[in-house]
Length: 250
Image (cartoon, rainbow, N blue to C red):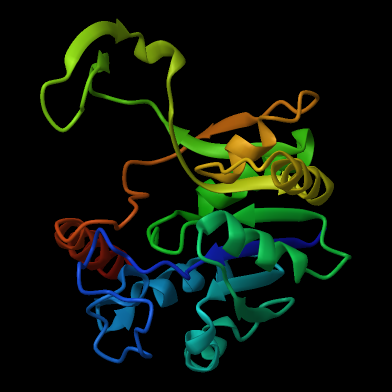
């Protein structure tokens, strides 16, 4: 079985920094775009790649970045994947996550069996989580990682930024917060992209695309609260704590 991991990393990180622009140059300080922000002296993207390179289930890694970042990102990441059964490839991404993943998907070797998509800024995914979600997808065709929300969830109307009115309480028993990796049989994800393009549908993650295929049922594997997505400046404090804990365990 060949498993390819796609890491979309072409975003501008506008929630992390208001100064990021479409003309951002290759970064050495790691301060503007979240995937390149420095954590323990290395870009967050590099930490994420290390996790998947360490998994014996992963054979190929494809990273999608902006065109101007391809060369230096490839040079940065290649030393991290020595010993990987397959290859690491850096390709040009798109203006949205969906476009980036689709472009990376189009570059895959036809021999790939399963495709995992993972947020480039989730560097604390555990190897056991990767193993479990891949095994589930291999058995069922589609599986994602998710956690049960701890807070009470309210349905509201009106502007959520202020003035919203509560319209009900949603039972947490039937809710999960989606994480990544999200893993699919190659043909299933391919059909999901084709259907989305045909219908001009934009999803928030790959699961939302696959959900539209009536014959496919997606399994959920329990994730971890440590599998955070570094999105806002405050997330870096927690990331540094988790990084120190991982270093201490090693």
